[in-house]
Image 1 (tube, rainbow, N blue to C red):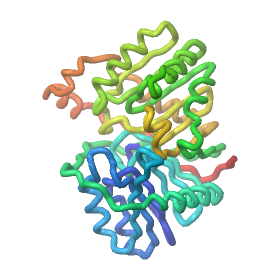
Image 2: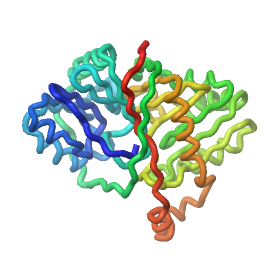
Image 3: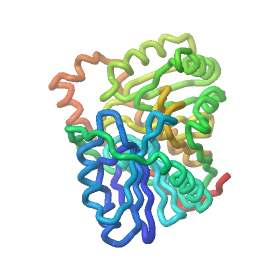
Length: 334
């Protein structure tokens, strides 16, 4: 992402998301008679977006469920199942304009597994929470390229099974992390920091963070990690061709992971999340994309300048760069 999204379904379509602010082509599918089921978080941070209410009110026949549970902090996962066989895994809340990652593939086995997850999580359905009085805005962006590949994929449902820490700690040669933000403490411990130290003592580590919504926090993290006595470099991304960095991706020695989970205690332990581990050509594509995002970026900058008119103007006239959406036609699964 960013890219246009057109969702095709003939019989049924299941969409799961933390929030929903883009209408996509859901109304068209609804009018065509496709059986639509939508699962959303009942109490997202800041309240349910106004756009979400408008989108849902335009759908006449869709089944809509809001989820809330004491077992999970939030239902933060994002995926879709099309006609019981096509699976779409996304780091995005079905929003077109952020830097994110989107994988579509055919697998009746994984589609059935996710449908069972949906049916299981419906036990947490409740009334929707408060509605936000704010409406989000998206900037200009350019569509990215698409690629097709064959390879192995492994599906993880968090917090039941979490591959993130193992992927980081097992890196021997090159570790690339592209996330909106990250926390180095883990429920009062420094476990996350120790994992990164372990990785950069063996491998070359590069971390790319967002420079919009989490700029001040990310600058402090970058300064601290860059001070470590190991092979690590951390930057904040410049906003060229997308609104913000929202995708969550790890590349480690030929394996790669995209996930809905933010790199903090909520995302990696308390939320309902999803992750997809891949191998092969897709990971080389993600690695290349990482370095495209990495170059010509800010190393560190004065956070106060972010709110200045000059900074906003400079971002607005930056060259739009075409980036990433996945399309996968055929795979082997495990």
